[in-house]
Length: 270
Length: 290
Ligand SMILES: Nc1ncnc2c1ncn2[C@@H]1O[C@H](COP(=O)(O)OP(=O)(O)OP(=O)(O)O)[C@@H](O)[C@H]1O
Ligand SMILES: [Mg+2]
Image (cartoon, rainbow over all chains, first blue to last red; front, side, top):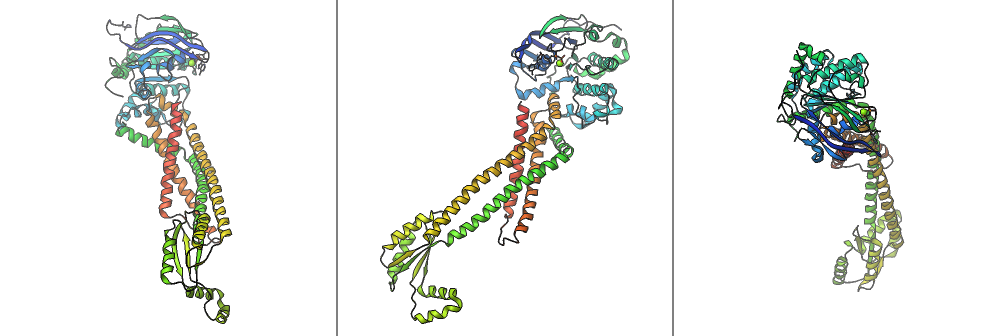
């Protein structure tokens, strides 16, 4: 099975950053940033420490507002964003961090369920979906464990499960493998590719250029708050190896198929 | 608007919060309970003292003594004129016979000496009680000046020095009481807001995470508000229980020491529930606004 090309007309912009600048302290953390993210795309955001990767992602989940320029996430425009609408945006995107950010006194199930609960989903549906979600990140058997009892890789899987629980159109990942050793890193990357192959666009920030180069995905290079290179890909989607494994691909597809072709502020109203 | 699911989850979060914070909640409640105890002791002492003062003020009377053998119409005239004065609350006629009887009672065993006098030497009099809110010493002075010249009035008397002293004492009591009350109240507010702040700080991580996964402010706030209300109720109950203990102990030495009425206790508990939830609300609001 081969990588498939983006069909003309199929490509839709689901996230865009336009002439974005941000000053932190006395310096530009970001300066005139421009890029767009299409549905189903997988993009690495690469740059050395202090390049502004985290800052850029924070602008995208609207934890902070740009000093100039704007961010458009689905129907949410940063320049017109009202504070009280931020939760609605957050439910339609997934966010993953280097430090996992799980609630320590809640077990795996409860941590993942939180994302669905705040979206107002009924407990019956949560329980039903949870089996699928946790099986797909390979942690169903550990659903009653607390984060403290899990390895770093497992914790990150829980975080990813939580991030995709509401079937987001975009997953923002800030150094998701930063705390993990190479073997575990590979597993997490594969999980992200799997999620991506189901249709969820992924923007993953990392400082590890070597890690990223081998996959042939689009890479945005960030340095001193500026984009120095944006290698657009001809192909959308998946890690070749995981693509060649059609079984995995099939499962992954089913996992996120709901978000394909659907605007993430869509009528599902979450 | 929150749907039925959200409402259920918010309640669940509240229960979880109360359970997970058992120890810190207990500490908070104890700290708050004792702070409130200081406040209620202050209130109770003020109330008791002000009741004593009021009674004392009631005892402060002006006596208008009448000339011997004044006729009834002049007596009535004087009564009416006295009643017209604004600061006067009550005017009681004390006949010479009644006065003698009282005098005799006061003398007790020695009342025999009265027999020596033969005729009753005491005059008829009016006893005038002042309104409690009137500035007693000034008002009494006025009555004295006015009534001295009236027809049929022999003499006007009141304990001038004593009244002035009493008034100074009352004023002093209320002023220091007010200052003290303010200090007590502010420290209670300080203690409670700090307790709430600590409770939020200990949960800042989960609050941040909730924000990240798209929880509305309401979803985050409601458990804190409920927790604040419950802490307010429990700590006010604790304060009341402690106060009751203190009172029944102090009551042995201070007979007539009054406790709050039932409505007062309920009102205080409701007030504390309200303060607790408002305090939590303000604190979590401030935290979320950063
Ligand atoms: N709150 C802040 N106040 C001042 N400067 C800040 C603040 N946050 C970040 N910066 C600065 O902004 C720049 C970009 O920081 P950012 O955290 O986005 O970098 P990064 O690419 O994520 O780095 P890393 O790989 O270390 O996570 C840095 O120079 C940093 O020092
Ligand atoms: Mg960073």
